[in-house]
Amino acid sequence: MKQSTEVLSIEAETIARTGIIRYYPMVVSKGQGARLWDVDGREYIDFSSGGCVANVGYCHPRIVRAISEQAARLTHSCFTVCSNDRTPILAEKLIGLLPGNYEKKIWFGLSGSDANDWIYKILPKATGRQKLVSFIGNYQGQTMGAAALSGLLPQKRFLSVSNVVHIPYPYCYRCPLGHNQKDCSQECFTFFSNYLSGSICAPDEIAAFVFEPIQGDSGIVVPPPQYIQKLLEFCRQNSILMVVDEVLSGIGRTGTWWSCQQLGIEPDLVVIGKALASGVPISAIGGRKDLLDAMTASHHVTCGGNVLASAAGLETLAIIEEENLLANAKEMGKLILKRMDKIRINHQIVGEVRGIGLLIGIEIQEGDDPSNKMAHKIVYACWQRGLLLYYLGLFGNVLIIVPPLVIDNHQMEKGLEILDEALGLVEQGKISDEDIRAFAAW
Ligand SMILES: Cc1ncc(COP(=O)(O)O)c(C=O)c1O
Image (cartoon, rainbow, N blue to C red; front, side, top):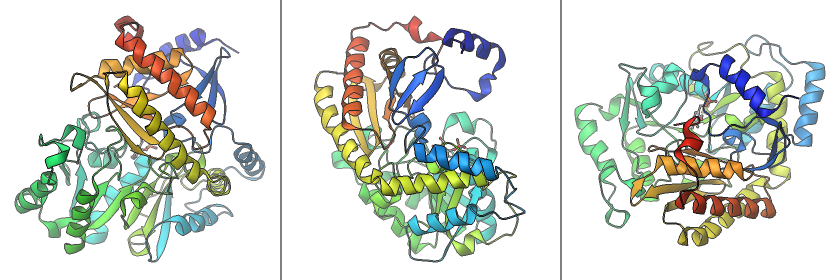
């Protein structure tokens, strides 16, 4: 097997920069549970789940078996034109897990992006209402419909006009309207309902609100319950659909199957992806039958609802249930918040620590200002010491702790110890600008 340096030099010559983000020079070789190894044999604790995908851990023996057995029978049959014996069963299982007491169906695709393209394409047609409302800081993906729904500059710069209106999200720690959390009266919502909806986006033109119940890429932003109440009321009063993007936050990550359940939201549609099949590509939209049946054969991809991915998906959902991973996510999440309460006392650069279950964000700041550079240095120092995590955020300064839901106490404690040490090293200036220069990600 080639060593990291050799692989990375081949990568530098061959792999398109448009498709990659790098936080550190790691070449992964194998995984097990919440641990990964690089090609040089170094072991790491993983706080990233490979982008919130490895919820049941890496190479779970049941997933390995399910994939191997399915691969030996059939890897592809083009579900768009011919059914198979796994995909409808996965749909049936998913329907049983979705919130809402109404008739449901499932659409299958390949990625969170193509699922959000469904929302962008179909909902205006299915409802006869042209506008979609999304939030500043939302991330729905890279394809054009998903990019139109996203409220982040890296996606927006490819679009000129669209029918999506973006409104402020209640990012209370860095309130877009400059309020502090104690005197907040949800003016960000009032701004929308009194001002925007009276000038550029009339309520009876809005097909749906599309949003991540807990914003992921913008830095694990949890909205206050009062805000969600106002939003729900507004949707009910104006017959506006509620679409939740659970691509990152779903499949058990917050300790319930869907993060919208933590906020008391009963959506019309749920967008699903990432962890659904433990890394075998598949995405889904689940929810109201009338919407999902609205336009026959109008959004499909050749490998969508693939049989191999469906087999892996069925096994993933079974493992989460049978190994009580929702309970573990809750318990481990509490442990992180408790330990971080202590860790932050010694580190001025740690701001708010927030999240639910194993979806936790840590604000890194210099004074009160978000610090992208410090966040990157911490992530780099963690990698050097055997802990993998990423940073994200509207300001690129939020460390995200999203380990596999199978992580145990010992691994969690060890990972947080490394994080504590890395915070100290960065504060003392022990990681240089030069160390991270080649890897600046966001
Ligand atoms: C909330 C959310 N929606 C959609 C997507 C897009 O999913 P994919 O990268 O599979 O296209 C992501 C990816 O990070 C996401 O976090």
